[in-house]
Image 1 (cartoon, helix red, strand yellow):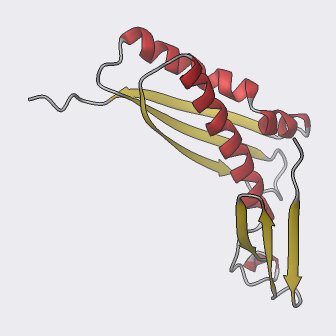
Image 2: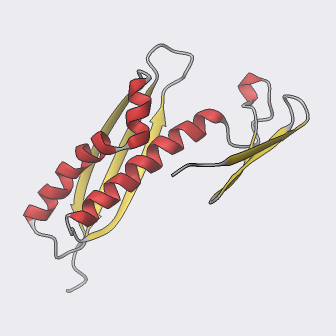
Length: 147
């Protein structure tokens, strides 16, 4: 399965561009601190979002394959300053299970957090480029609506 992307740019470093793919459209710009306007997505944000969405979707697939009662997931990712040695991306994930979840299902969801990190294709490509990716997370069970 290949991916096609089209990128266009207008103007100089203070200009603006656009990227478009099958299910993606975004304005892009050079970050303000590098002499651009900063009024668009920059390459670092795209890299981190690629790693984050790959991890999240991999985790969703694992949780579904285990038939776990997932209510929702929240992922926050942060990258270090690429100018510093040892570029890192950290993922903080919260998995929320439905009220009927058993302790066994909570434990299974917890073990899936690291499995998704090991199985994420984009994350594995970045690790080959010596980018450190860390995953921390928690699993919670929603309270029953019954009183």
